[in-house]
Length: 88
Image 1: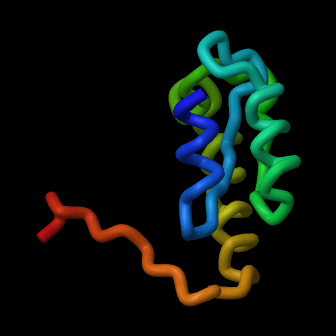
Image 2 (image 1 turned 90 degrees about the vertical axis):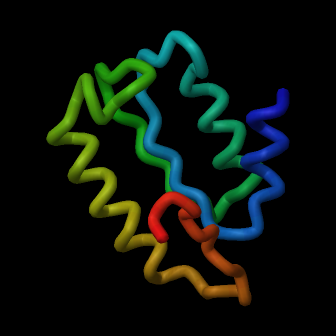
């Protein structure tokens, strides 16, 4: 599973905002990542599919705000956030 390997080796915090009815990556995958990386905030969005920002935008935005708040409380173990190359 390349996606799992990527999520497990990222040096910076990860937030999981998951659609409960995702047909491409079932929520069991999100639970597995959360179990392996226990400090990973995991938000399961009921009734959402693969793109919860589209199918449940209000719930998604609330979960995003909560996730950013939870990330701000984690220690910053000297990680560097990736820089957007297109933003320069």
